[in-house]
Image 1 (cartoon, one colour):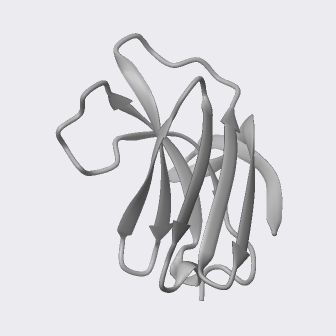
Image 2 (cartoon, helix red, strand yellow):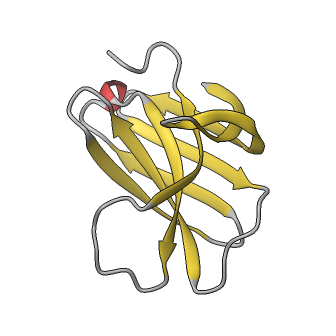
Amino acid sequence: FIRGDLTAPMDDKPFGGEDVGSYLILVKDHKVFIAAKFDGTVNEGMVLEGWLVDTDTGYKLSTGQLVDNRQIFKQIIVNPYIYDLYVVTEEPMNDVDPNANVPVGGVMLSNPFGQ
């Protein structure tokens, strides 16, 4: 497993600034478990959404909404190790755009991720 701090966006990256939360990611075989907590505030009319990001292709897999600034995500993923980042974005409530919106926190995932 890996765990650590989520950090605010810095420069052109969705991470690298001040601490804004924490995360834990556990992978056993193809079963992925993510627990995340965002310590910041959410703008009115917005919600938080988690994402696993493959920076090589730009593909983003939504891990769903953070409820009360927390996320518990469990899923079987064919190859979870292609993802390099875990990012939290602020999205309009009832968003119809499937793309990630403005990042508010993130982390570069360490080995064995990013393969």
